[in-house]
Image (tube, rainbow, N blue to C red; front, side, top):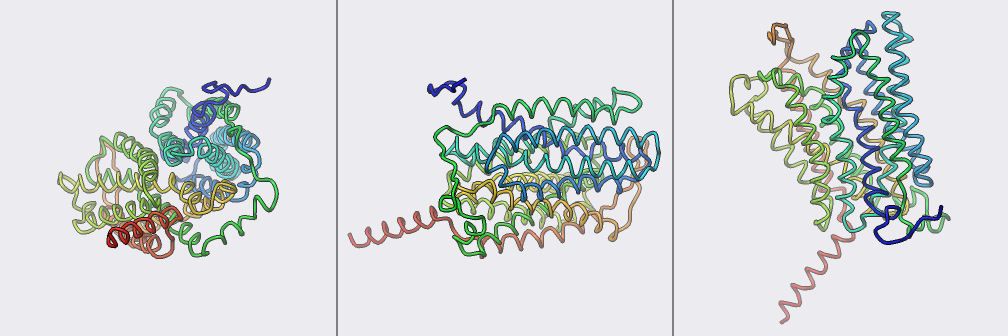
Length: 458
């Protein structure tokens, strides 16, 4: 059936054709961050330690970045093909994970079960994550030309908010499905997310007036696009994006343990939900705010300065080590958690719009995809870096929480902050020295200078 071009018709409505499908896709794949809710239960069910199962999440984030980098051109050429790949891989990987958990329950300690979870949750779902994350982004920027930051922030906020939305649902499923609830939950969610993502796939559509470049003159190679600016500009964007994610994952991966260490074990779930809200809020708020700025890179300067200040305060006061029963220090530690979550989310939502401001819209999906490789590498380094530090610095201490003995290492968590504050400082220096102002910022500066000179002449 021929699509109507009547103004306001659903077939040409930017909310139905871009915003809603983006939310359906991102709210589904964003549940990858719910891993911490069930990782220990998976390990117990199949007979492996939590540290062994943790690699499934690290692989998922790594292959998210790698699939985005290598499949960016597929997304560029055909968003329907890429969104369908995302739907099949994410839902299929989730169902496959459920099967290997079931198999691992029957064969405790089975290497095949663990490898199957790595492949399904890590590799297959990782491909779904990368293609699903990229597919709606360019479409959103094309429909919302004047508020690109708001549009991409809205979708990417869905990725961040997915944890807050899905966590209580997953917890309830685990508690209500009885024996084997862990693998049953994966089967149920695979069906739910397939439906959500498939509807998003069907609705997603670029504007009719957008002409996709097809030849080399209109659409140069990614290398040629990057070279339109000094190479240090793109290198700077990639590195500061990588470091922001690494720092965010390092702290977020220890978040629950830190909360327990400062004496708030009874409200871990509440704080986890609030931090997820800050993560989503940072994605939407920072990107919408950047729409009003002459240079979007200013947002990154703000994120790094806020993160440095919050981390330095907790380091100076030894907030994690001394926070128990000290209201002021507890507030400082919680503020750090929330600020890092917000900055972590804001870093994601501003990357595609910052890239489009520097390099244009022609190859933005492919360029954004290559940049997301930073996320993949950070997925391998962020969590593992924090885990290594906690295992090698300080000594675990016992805490009695709800009648159970829980081991925490406040000194180890505090040591993580020394590393993250150093990396945030490096990120700020890169932001200031390597990433050049956008053309829009240069024009605004030149206009302001000309106005001042004209005023002096008069």
